Image 1 (tube, helix red, strand yellow):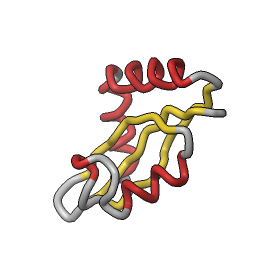
Image 2 (cartoon, rainbow, N blue to C red):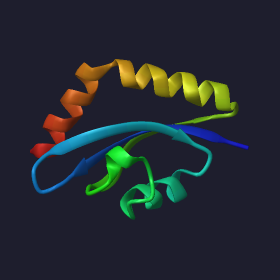
Image 3 (spheres, one colour):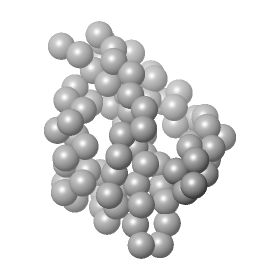
Image 4 (cartoon, helix red, strand yellow):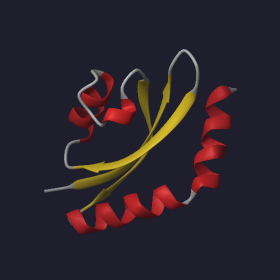
Length: 84
């Protein structure tokens, strides 16, 4: 089975936000986020995948997710790019 670490970017009426997570089915997870059945903090946004990386082990995907959450300058840069 494959696992993925991913970054989403979403836009609501008031702001632009990024979200980092991991999953074993990236398309199904994106659909959950977009239908309001994903994480509570993702409700009310229209999400797009802007980055993902495939891993063979769940632990590796979780480590990558943790790393991605810690590099906030990159996430800020991605937000600015999305605005333009």
